[in-house]
Amino acid sequence: NPQTHLKDPDMVWDFWSLRPESLHQVSFLFSDRGIPDGHRHMNGYGSHTFKLVNADGEAVYCKFHYKTDQGIKNLPVGEAGRLAQEDPDYGLRDLFNAIA
Image (cartoon, rainbow, N blue to C red; front, top):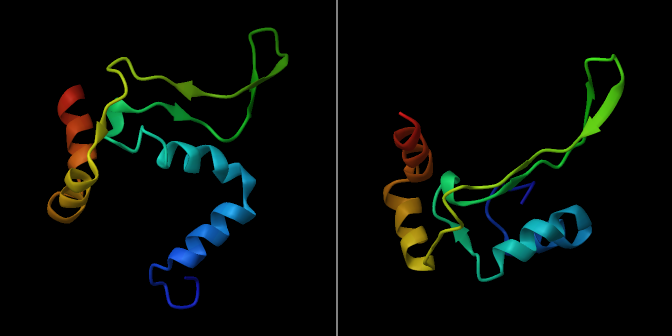
């Protein structure tokens, strides 16, 4: 809620319903995919288009999509809730350890 800064389920639905660009994410959130098991097990899609310049000096437009090589993996709701309380850095730590 922008006035109280407290979580407000009505405001969440207002945001989603009034911003059609959020529909893609909401569809994933409420699908069987659910909550990703860290950053390594989800795809990422950039929302903006970037203007780049190629070797010939020509402007080209690009959108970035990041596809996981590890496959999509999700957390059960109970496990996600537990991690949110006990280890909120779970996903970041998993990504760091996989790279290190």
